[in-house]
Amino acid sequence: MSFLYHSKVVLISLLAIVLLTSCTKEDESSLMENSLVNVKLVGTQTQLSKFNLEILDVQLRVLEDETDPNAWLSLNAINTGIHDLTDYTDNQVLTLVDFEQVPSEFVYTIKLVLGDHNTLVKNGMEYLINIETEYDNASVNILEKQLVENKLYDFTIELNIDESVRFSSQNEVKLDPKMNTLMRLYNLF
Image 1 (cartoon, rainbow, N blue to C red):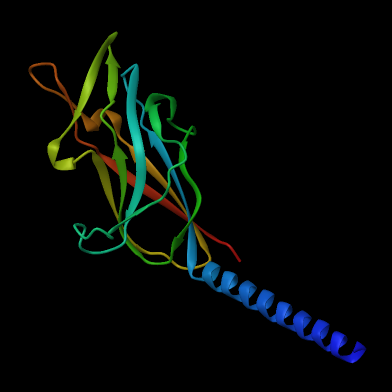
Image 2: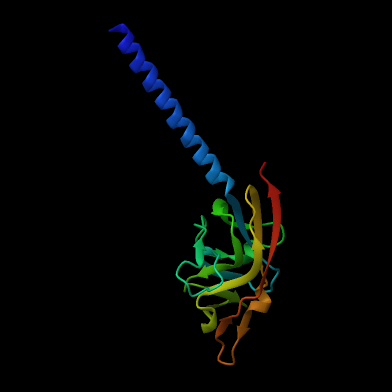
C-alpha cells in the first residue's frame, strides 16, 4: 500500500511540474511576440488661454485597409476625458497610454479619438470647437513602423495648437489637427 501511495504522489508531483513549466513557457513566448507602447500628448505654445480636448481613446492601425473592422487596435488610454493642452507644453506631457502590451506588427498610423466636448478660450471668450467632418472625430498621424518584439516604443504626439485651429467669418472654430509624432525606442532585454 505504501508503494502505491508513494507512486501516486510522485506521479501527481511530476504532472504538476510539467503543467507549471508548460504554462511558464507559453507566458514567456507570448511576451516575446509583443512590444510595449507608451503614448504621450503635448501641445505647442499658444496665445490661447485654454485649449480643451476631449480624448476618448488612442488607437493604432495595424491593417492596410482602414475600413476593415479589425484595422484599429485600441491602446486602452488611461487618461481619457477633457484636458487643457495649454497645461501640457514644453516638458509637461499628458500620458495617455502607459506600458500597453501590443502585438509586434506593422503599424500604419496612430489616432487620437476625440469626443464632442472640445472648447478653447481666446481673449476671455469661450468657443466650441467643431472638428472638420473629414476627420470623423479623430486626429491621425502616419507612423509606418514595424514593431519589434521585446522593445518599448515611447510615442510623443505633439499637437500644434495655433496651426490646428481656424476661426470662420461667423466666429466658429474648426479643428484641423496638425500634429507630428516623435518615437523613442528602448530595449527591454
